[in-house]
Amino acid sequence: MTLTLAPMEGVVDVHMRDILTRIGGFDLCVSEFVRVSKGILPAATFRHICPELDQGGKTASGVPVHVQLMGGEASLMAENAAFVASLGAPGIDINFGCPAKTVNRHDAGASLLQWPDRLHEIVCAVRRAVPEEIPVSAKMRLGFSDKSLFLENAQAIEAGGAMKLTVHARTKLEGYKAPAHWEYLAPIRETLSIPVVANGEIWTVEDFDACRNISGCTDFMVGRGVIARPSLGLEIANRQDKAFAWPIILDWLSYYRNLIMVMDNDVREAGRIKQWVKLLGRSYEEATKLFVDIRRLQTPDDIQVFLIK
Ligand SMILES: Cc1cc2nc3c(=O)[nH]c(=O)nc-3n(C[C@H](O)[C@H](O)[C@H](O)COP(=O)(O)O)c2cc1C
Image (tube, rainbow, N blue to C red; front, top):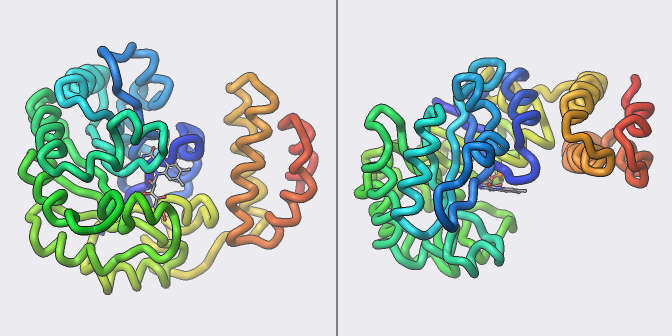
């Protein structure tokens, strides 16, 4: 069994990866997407999204961080993949799942799921461009507006040379609306010979068990679930249903506050803390109350007063 921390733009940055991999349970992280739309991006852009590139491509607790690229032009994707591999990325992941309108209008992310041959072309080009020892993987949804191409897309990605495929078990049109359709993962797993990583709507160990039973997968990715319940990775790895007590969460919030002070922008830093507290509200009543107390505060220092036990 492997567990991967999901890429989440604007949420799972270097600091959140640091915290969640320190807490434990994760074998791998995937960075927020790097948008590839013209030319080779500067090294600083890759280092901004994935500062771990300067520490051997791993989080402080030693979990590798693969860099995710998103774009629709195969040759550009390939050039950028080769470049970020030369900067020390331990793996490259290709995003075929982003539902954002601005992204899809510009021919990237989930919109590419309408054309299996284009997925194939992009994966092929990236695979050819990076050294053999660097794994290339992809992440897709079940389709764009419907699921009719889900198997073709998965097969196209495998045939392109991906060594692993993560499937967020919903279409682009379904957005983030529950449920995730784990039942579609079984035929993909049975058809492909590469590992299929199950993703979507795993919030508890119980959800994890249901997803495993329905999909038959042995590899999983969790995103929002572990932001809302930071012990989820550990709970899954140790097979125990026991969330951290609230005072432990307060300690991690204070730790997070210290880490994000490098952003050097009070409002942004405060915004990040509020965002996490809001998401914690899904698992902790205390977080819902805390959010009410801090939602109008503009600086991390003002918020810190409320993080003391
Ligand atoms: C705020 C947010 C940002 C996301 N950013 C990315 C991203 O950069 N790349 C990507 O492949 N998926 C991204 N996703 C999708 C997640 O990786 C994941 O597939 C999705 O949230 C379903 O998993 P979950 O139910 O465990 O959260 C994002 C999701 C959210 C909610």
